[in-house]
Length: 123
Image 1 (spheres, rainbow, N blue to C red):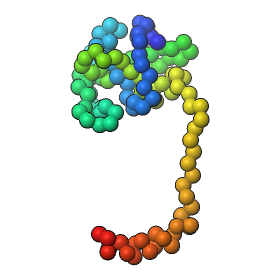
Image 2 (image 1 turned 60 degrees about the vertical axis):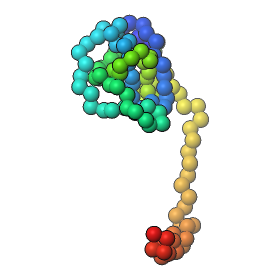
Image 3 (image 1 turned 180 degrees about the horizontal axis):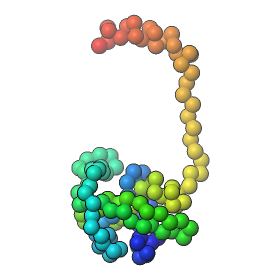
Image 4 (image 1 turned 30 degrees about the horizontal axis):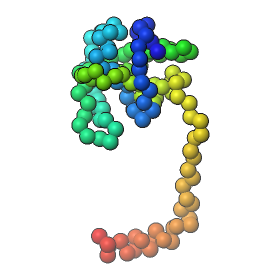
């Protein structure tokens, strides 16, 4: 994959909602970082990532090209592309979508009515 026309290694994380760059951003044509408007959290919560800023990056794959927002973090833990960007670049394909049908509310309407009648006793 190329970032700003420079070949680099970027991990695809389908569980991530944002794109992350570490010190790699210095190697791919560092531009001035924009003010950070989001505080990304790691998987499972915990301490927020130490974000120094954000920037737009030209990302090129074998078949696709796009400009995407990346958050720049301190350290050298690697760069990653989140699910949305990976999908736009054609890097992630859903093989078997899962569709869950919600139960019909008519079936449970009487149960819900009784639950609301007795709710004050449980509160």
